[in-house]
Image 1 (cartoon, rainbow, N blue to C red):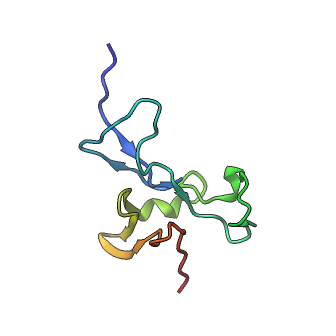
Image 2 (image 1 turned 180 degrees about the vertical axis):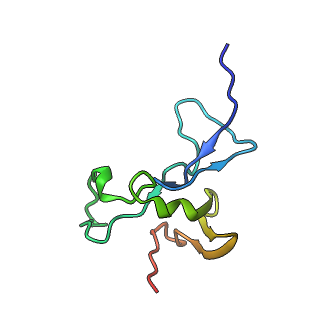
Length: 108
């Protein structure tokens, strides 16, 4: 018999995961909020009006960028609120999708 010891959701592909105390898993479905987003490299070409598959090398990942390990990420799949902390200090706290279900990108 197989036993699940931990369920870890990765809100942003390639970044830190979050251990879940509980979650509703549905047959033939993914974990809600798991890898729904990714940080594209600055030179990645992407057309929101004509989205196509992009290779994983177009995105940041802990495997290649060790400094990303300093980020602690939390994502609420219902509200689409995404939080990034560095050393327990909140540096990003944003809702990723607006009321029209459009991905919001803000650059400071």
